[in-house]
Image (tube, rainbow, N blue to C red; front, top):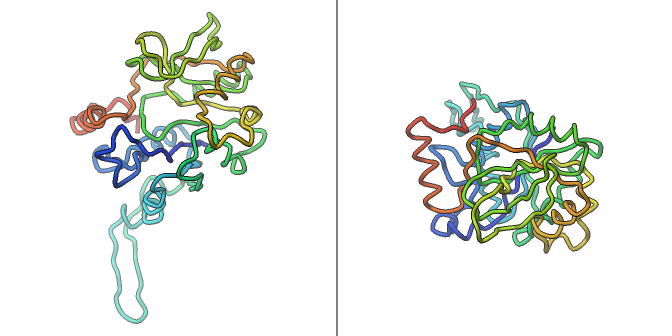
Length: 261
């Protein structure tokens, strides 16, 4: 099943790091956070990715175009008929990565709509942000999504409350979606969505100027088509320099809960 990852934002709250590179390329250890996120999916059997590029997307393209060179020892025969020999394999050789240009200034709803052509009409797809990690059981989220049969499942988490807060019914239907509330508490939007292609019914020709987390998701919730999977484990975005430092400290100390590989 395909995993769509939103990689196009400008990361303005991390401007000291994102002035020169896109936020998904900020490193945790020696690999970009985007790579860590993809490993979470790939370890659970999902290795077909669609990356929604925007701001400095060419750097993400360069990373994957040169992936074999980065991961391998190489012998080069110089001369008029140069040859290259790669000496070792890497565990990502069976990944498929679609690098889709979705516009530098396009908002999240538009980015999703622009990659619709790369998705299977009759299959759900994973959808998440390119700047957060967690030990999320994505197959459990998928199974939950298949059971309820609605348009969209969001993974609900409980970190500090400056993200989209979710009001849930006893059967886990999302009754209200409040983007970036001022008060803390309650469940919040942790990304790691599973979506059916029904979501494209909520993305019209004006989608480029819309945040998916605002009007489209509110309409999905109003139609009783939004459900939440409660994740009680680790989840951490990288939205500030302090969070960037935290994730690197956890990784360097060998205490990264999202490392399930």
